[in-house]
Image (cartoon, rainbow, N blue to C red; front, side, top):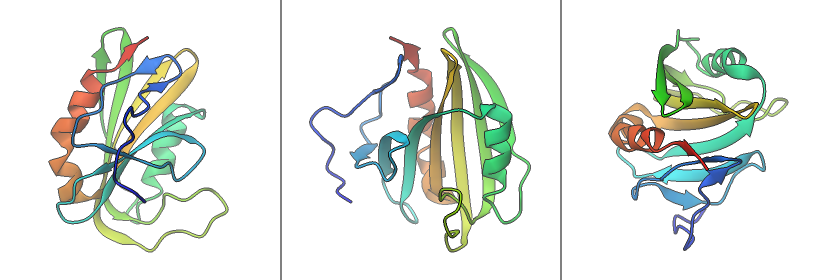
Length: 155
């Protein structure tokens, strides 16, 4: 996949908009479910931030994400308000085994990985910002991830 961002990266998912940090390079989406995919600069390996608008609710998705880790970790959760938006931040650490679509073969286990996600519910939909990759790479992108979350707003 190319790491060259288009001249004007997509920034909207429905009515929700945000500012992508300069370090987040827009790349082609790996799935038609994704609104945007960003590549994160390597520390100990590639990480990826995907933006998906989907259903299923916060609890069901957090449980599914925990199931994508071999250890089935208990998610670290934090609720935030960004303007009028309710945002749930979720962190998971361990050996990542999932990420594919249901019915597809699981990926090879990836030790010492981290998922950092923000879930925003607005207009009857949920938008998921999922940053997944080697723990060191995700940790290095935390400041930019937090800046993206802080920029969330309704158009």
